Length: 152
Image (cartoon, rainbow, N blue to C red; front, side, top):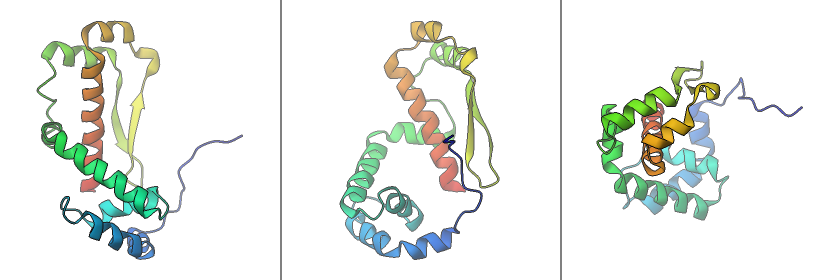
């Protein structure tokens, strides 16, 4: 049986930064004009793209562009205030019909998101909230989680 699980032993951040310092340095040089970035942010791309520098650069540039294009959503997440594009009625429907939230963190600091699918009322939710607005909500929730992890 193939079960997905998180490793119980992880390398330290310092070890990862040291091991991947070459690609981190190359990423920093390629992206310096794009945004203020730190080594931990760059490490994500080094790990995700397995030393494939062109792919890592492309993905990092896309992430930087997304954050610039969605700066109001990024600011809303930083303030933990729902995006202003969502009405009170839409927010109420999301909270009533989409039973899911970040619950806690693992001992490694990973956020735990609990989703109670059997409690969803998708039909009513989609009567009140458009697909585009629901996508906005998911992006907001993901951005909140990203900022939480970034702060840790």
